[in-house]
Image (cartoon, rainbow, N blue to C red; front, top):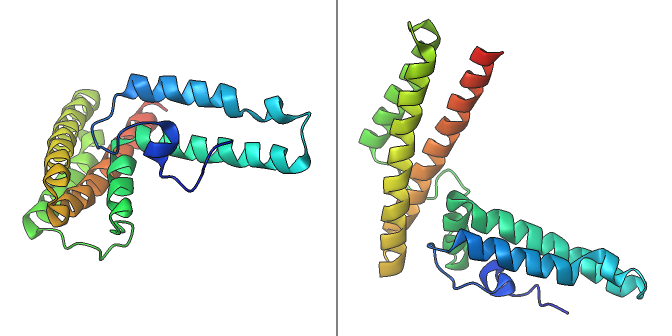
Length: 176
């Protein structure tokens, strides 16, 4: 059987890195799902069946974590003993916070625009560009061992990911 005391990277068989090959992740996930699926253990003892369910649960959580750039970055920091879930984990630069307020104000004004869909598309492209830059910055900082800077990049990514969700919600409301 498998060892769920390993981290997600080791369990799935990938290098511990921010930059991972998503198709390799998908391939390894499929291989492990075939190997660990509870149906394969239906004829075995209750204990072995429970272990199979645990392994599948761990695999699913690992794949979800490694698939998402934000969750993967948070997990990498967690492996270093840094919890980015608490709001006070790292201070955020005031200029970044001002920028976030301005982006949210723009979002609030979009329904009143002549072409709200075009405005939404522009805002989403801008935010996704910022996310891309932060992901690249995180990868570099993490690789260089600059964990404070990497943590700050993750905190900024959290703000922008929430904004993407808000943009998608507004688009649903406009469609709706």
